[in-house]
Image 1: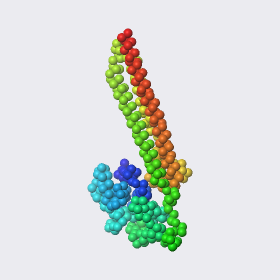
Image 2 (image 1 turned 120 degrees about the horizontal axis):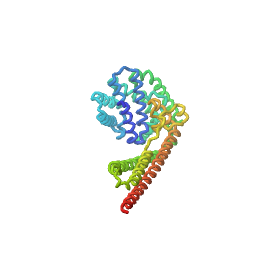
Image 3 (image 1 turned 60 degrees about the vertical axis):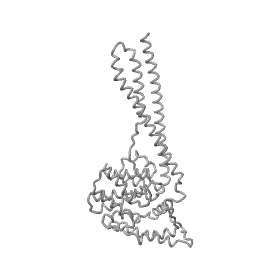
Image 4 (image 1 turned 45 degrees about the vertical axis):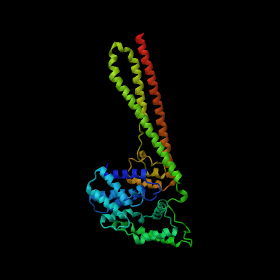
Length: 393
């Protein structure tokens, strides 16, 4: 696996495990957009391999600091990247340049190099997107929750207009050519919304949010999914642990039997041990087979089609449905799912349901395995007792 793929997996896991759900804008979805925008600019430019690697690493890590709070998140992001780079033994020059580019994403700083301009344009590529207003509302919601900063529609629109007209400008030729035109349209749209404002300062026709308040999952729903998934995962780990214990114990029994009992069965004086030894080995082998069955993974196709996504037939939350797909197709599919609340919720529900089915199968097989093991021990002990009694008789 290349360093960029490792970085993506690291950041995904970090956000999944440590980023608060309150960060509705600065999350892994935003990170993927920045990475995709950086790749667009890189493809139109002539850069060295080291510069490309540093830009992509900076794109992946530039917001990881939010896992430790929003204050000075750039420096926190640098620290997280430095730990990753040390573990992956990245060369010093790439580390230096990547950390420099992460710091360059701080908005109050002016880009001083061409690479700074690329990462800044990638980070603000959404200014030139058709769904800018919806994306903006995600940031508004995040600030309200995380920083307790609330704005009226008038204040928010005025702030957006100031940002796009006075505080921001695209730096690279690619961004100016491909994103500036749409950014200008967004400025016009903001002005139109401002013109629609009534005297109360609220929109007569409110800005359409990416997720209306009524459509947003409550904290209780988010917590329910998170806790249930965590419980499923822990139960699965417990089942695997129990299966490993049975595998180990029975492997030891078979090993001792083969090394100690079996060689002695050649002797005529030990003929009485043949049957109990065979019973012991038979039950141990059966126990091992059922323990393996309880942990054996199910092979899936690992791919999907766009038609299946449009028909809402694929659960993208399960790795077995997408591991063979290219990244751009998976990103497109995930964005489609995230824009459809019902599709997203149903996928999460399906994920929990099928995890439950897997757990049910595991624990049924484990129960059978333990019963076989227990019965085998009892029958074997009885068989050995009878064998020794028959010898004495």
